[in-house]
Image (cartoon, rainbow, N blue to C red; front, top):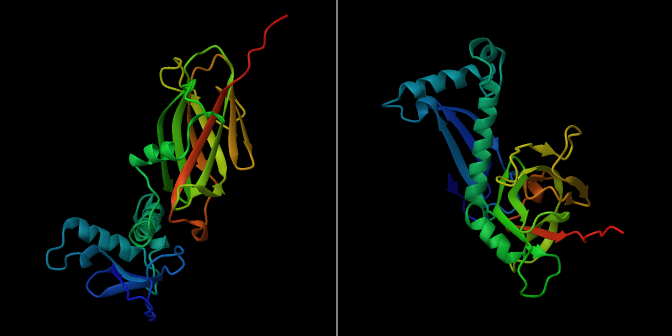
Length: 277
């Protein structure tokens, strides 16, 4: 890939040349609508015998034959053709989709400033958002432990996971999870809706590993979950010592991708004790 000069305009700007075999450009793939705010570029994807024409490997030859079989009569794309179906086992369509998806993902990484991810993500998220008692302004320790917090972007959605556990058991409790786009100053500027939440009992909290999704109606979930106005709210009975969660945001269109950071806010509280009599 090569960045183009700012202001340059030509017919192949922001296109990817899909290239196999010596001199065989199958398609100039227009990626100008990939995402907003990206740098102008020219790129090629070199496959098969084009990777090393003088010293091709056996794998290069195999990929060359696969891609050639995936081309329609016009040799202008790589598709799930009838010949491909007749020649190769099931999974050929997924392989082609994966190839194009990886090209798009790499372009985003190279051309757009990416949100923080990986091991540094949870540390920054916890620093940006105080996690513990809702509205607590004192130095009192939180009655909850939070661990394993992580977030990553994949397949058009944000995926967030972690664990919540009350320090003292035997009391009902609830938690609220929200996601937001952060501005340069670290403050939330745009909410990111949560579309699904999966729960399981946290490791060590009980002997179970009963994974439950919010939209499943069978079995006894470890907590009651409600999705409301983009937030996920869970209410746990006193028998639930801890929960692992996996939240998935609503799909984001390319035009909605932001070059900033994702903020995760978790507010948790113990329910008031109800005394008999």
